[in-house]
Image (cartoon, rainbow, N blue to C red; front, side):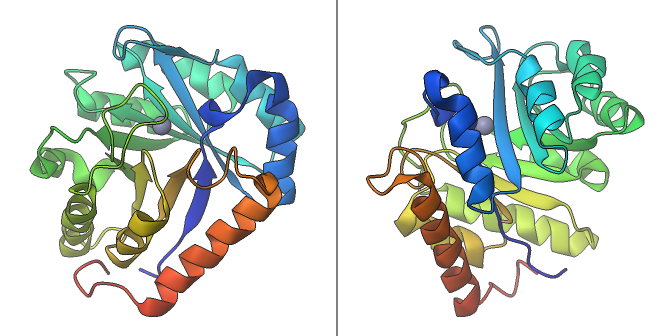
Length: 235
Ligand code: ZN
């Protein structure tokens, strides 16, 4: 597959009082994916965003792709509401349901792209029984639930493991990296086959020169990583 590299800023890093302005600034800076964390206080010990954020974004910016990260149990309960809200990609945690294949099919049947999320403590080969059904695999670089954590270095090798699995199966799903992305660690993730980068406070938000410049800097960094080349096992 041709390498695809996408900046997907996580709106959980915005000040809620500036959310609308931040979204507009991201879009003006060329962002086309927005990462939306939905947390229920049960799967993770935190709460984040009502589902209406998706429909509000899609109403104002219909061409923007919503990259929804569902941290809720049971995920099956949210499929129809996510479809009604206009979600594009919906990714759920493989340990949030006993019926991963059923959940993947339910998302697709409802017209959405289906993704799974794997935590740092879970084995990558747990993905193999349903790898042919996914549109996206998100490799968590932190334990989910809070912004502002540190990137786990082991993530870089795990991204390559997923990319090898993709190559061996002849598939073209997107590999997403979520959690504490910053400049030393983004480049090896690019080399190892990651496609979607969930950006936060180390790259795009709360930067002294503002969101617009920070997004352009991030794009440059992605380009630089791509110019250096990709691991032959990744593609
Ligand atoms: Zn997320």
